Image (cartoon, rainbow, N blue to C red; front, side):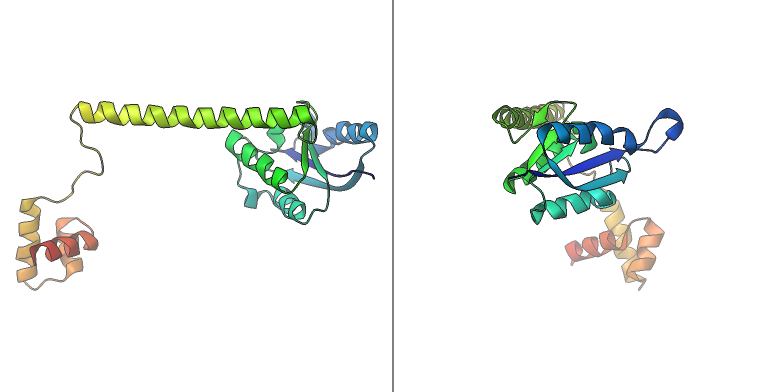
Length: 200
């Protein structure tokens, strides 16, 4: 049974003068498919930054939807950077394709999640991402602990004070509206309402 594949081509900014076109990726991918005896059923092509969200990369978005419909068995790109700039996003993409039983190939990097070595590589990438996330969490916690130890209070600074509350109450007694009080004191209407409720 012939393996049906989709190709994904992407460049950030087209520039023919410097060879920045998706056409440069196509020969390598079609040659790879010929060697593997794959049938190319569709080519998806974006000319947009990989930092953009899935919704702002129309071809990538369409590819993900077609993968859900199982229109192909494997999706192939030139290298992993074509899927996006973020490791987290790439991991999510790999997991989504794996859930649908679709292999992912990055020709330049030698990644093929349809093979046993490729699946091992996918697990290693996932572990690296998890490890990186744990390091960031630990660093954040350590930073917060140092901040508290140094006597710095966490959270947003208070914008009200007893003096300000007294001014709010005095202006209310003058029958001024909440909006007028907020404008005069220089705080939001929500802050005025909160202080009035606390004083009630």
